[in-house]
Image (cartoon, rainbow, N blue to C red):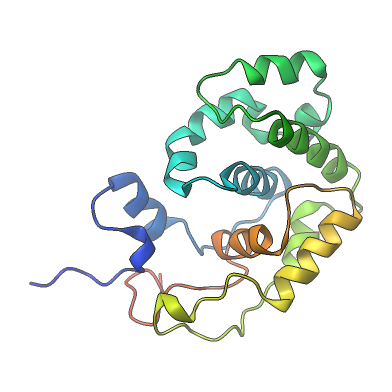
Length: 183
């Protein structure tokens, strides 16, 4: 029997990556704290492997109070120093400070973060035949990044915004024959 077809980025060896691909990536995710977690993790991923972030995700959740927007928005310089000393996460001051600033911006959003992000859903995006057909940036991701920046978010450029859109199901970029496409 042949191996199931998956998007090539999922690889075939790391069980954590396979589970993320098969059961999570591209599935609709809503809720302000849930979306905030993904915005934050995408920011931390910038310049790194997503697998690195996945392996540290539980540490991130513990370090950032499970990405509770009100809790993270209240962080102080002491929290920044605590996070910089936490070997279980990516210790980058600019990214840590951006996540705290993004929590403050999310806290003040009329209607909430999930609603703002989901206004940019693209259910009619073309179905990619191969990963080469998957864009890195779209007009929708440019618009999402622009709107987030308008509200004070940082580390949310169009490429990061598109990765977020893919991750939480605003678009379904599983390739046409991928086993996870129709789940």
